[in-house]
Image (cartoon, rainbow, N blue to C red; front, top):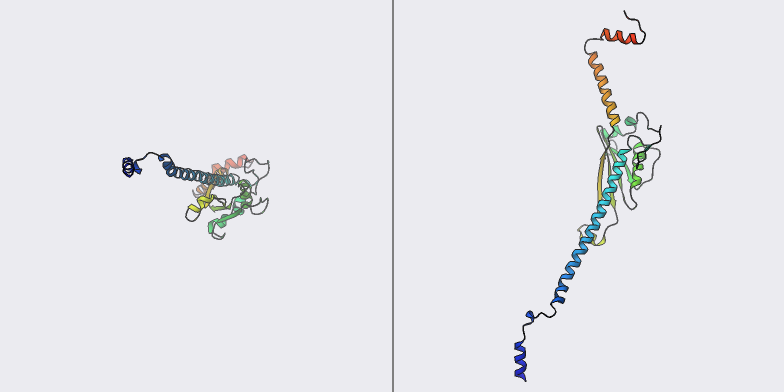
Length: 233
């Protein structure tokens, strides 16, 4: 009996050559790897979605603010305005933070800032009124700051937003935690004012060039006086 059992034991294949249970062993090794990889990809997609959503909101606020900068009565979304509503004639010199932007008088920032989220201002500082109208587009749950920078020829609106709601697994996995923060800017363009300034410079340039040529042209002066009923000799 012992000899028969010994022969049967020796006739068996080694354990590492057996095929029984190979699927269970392979599944127990492969399935956790696949599950972890898919979970990380899903969390990464959620992170990219939140990051892109935050960037889109920040860019929209900056662009809307720069779009209505020439008239604080404009609607931030559509740009429509009631006819006859305009800012003061010299608001670019008095209410546009020109002096503080040139000399850095506003706490070294050279501009004006607005905390987000914030209410809508209908009066007060003109720059804050314009930024507050555009800041209404900030989704709930986000906070940050808007800043206006005036450097004579270049004017910009900066919007920095952060989203406190983060994905817990990624927040624990990333060293230092996951911080969703973005910064966008938009350059303010004012084509009407640019054309007006160029025309003004051309006008005074022509006047100065004529004054330096040695006096007034008598023929031109006689023609002007004749148009207004003056007597010429």
